[in-house]
Image (cartoon, rainbow, N blue to C red):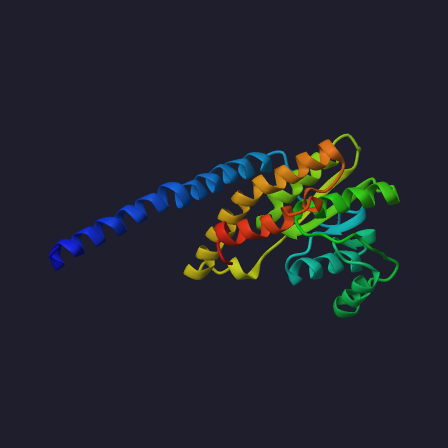
Length: 235
């Protein structure tokens, strides 16, 4: 076989590898993300309305993920928006540490929450607090780009409870300003939210059917982390 022929064979093999990688791996990921985005856009129409300025509630429920969400939760508490404040996944000591950082709101009870490994487990924690403390209204605090998925899950999981849910979308400074980097990050966040919508829906369905957490099933949490590393885009 001549060097020229070897090069042609190598190039054809490489081209086939690219094509099959696209067909088997990359294209399904984009299809999954696209369908997830359509799901997110659709469920956004059913999401709770944004909280008007000065709205009151029984509980401020923060879904953590960025310091800006936690800061916004404490700002609402300091403004007297609710008598209770909870941050999903934080126990009493961690809550007190955050209060020392952002300012301890006078007259507001800091409510401990169970651990959380996902957005759905934030929702699971929220329902547990609603039942435990007799909550009739809550303010959901999370990033604006996270609102469609998180608020839809919360609304579904509280269905029939009579609890009023309003959202407080928190702006993410990383995607403000209109720079090319901000647009790229916004696209990555949209892709990731689209993909993760399916995982969150699976977790919610499992919890509704079994009353337990899917991530407690041996091996599932590790599998979920592995898939995220392979599919989600780095933010």
